[in-house]
Image (cartoon, helix red, strand yellow):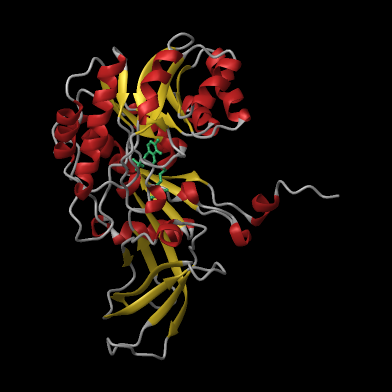
Length: 415
Ligand SMILES: Cc1ncc(COP(=O)(O)O)c(C=O)c1O
Ligand SMILES: N[C@@H](CCCC[NH3+])C(=O)O
């Protein structure tokens, strides 16, 4: 498949039609996630084109909505799951082969996943601790097992999403070969696995090379395997002026660093598949002029919107930058702080960013909201989660209904 068939490497917020998004917000209300399934398919296809010899598994945690899962499955990717819930959702969405990467797995997760395995699901369990291997053995699991390794090298857009080099994830590199060989007595050991972290940019290529090279060495030391999984983490540009990741260069670096191994390469990207396929629409409800003109000489404005950290957590949690566009009007720029309705100081989408001064009623679009957006939404402050619309060709349809306050209290038990 050519690069052209898979679309350009990044879809910027400016590329979305303001008229179409405004129509959706008017019809379905705000806050509203909009996910373009055609773009999801393009991203999946671009990954397969860049890594034609690899098994590409979508890290479903980035966006686990059914419509996205089905689109990615139809594009031919597998599923990488981090919990029993994700495994169940991937199997229900029709994935033939599912990988469960168990992180400190609660007993209930192991029980649910192994029940599915006993029922015949084609599952690979990735264990990141000797203790997890023991628990799997104790539960009578003798199926497809991979060992997650701490590669000792990490990368990512923020320290909170850097996994490599953190003792939480994987078995120590120098103990991995022994664990793989021991496990062969009781399981069908099919692979080794490592993940550097999330949001890897071109600047992190050296860390990626190092991780892959270490995994190549490990693979050669343990003998034939079905796969060497070098994780996901491929980043997308969040700033308007950031270049897209050169996927071909990453693929070439991966092949070179892995060297000759008696195993297939596997990767498990999440963000890359869905980030630029999603926008979050939010309506301005409050505008405040702030007295202090500051160094810019322009009166800063705080614009209150109906989405908050409960809708899109990334700015509050990682200080993540998301592009913001006023779809209603292009007015002269001034320093604007966009703030949500949650009673937390960190509930901000940007602080004193130069953008057209919003007015009450304006519609704002927040870019790259397709990955770790809806999935990290919460009901803090008793705020119902937003609705999600999916686009496919000319069609727009509701994929997740807007929650209500009744939904938020539905599980409460009265005395
Ligand atoms: C084990 C594992 N695989 C894959 C991913 C997907 O990462 P990303 O969405 O950055 O591609 C993650 C998240 O960091 C992960 O922890
Ligand atoms: N949730 C993170 C990515 C972490 C992925 C899981 N290991 C983000 O939004 O950037």
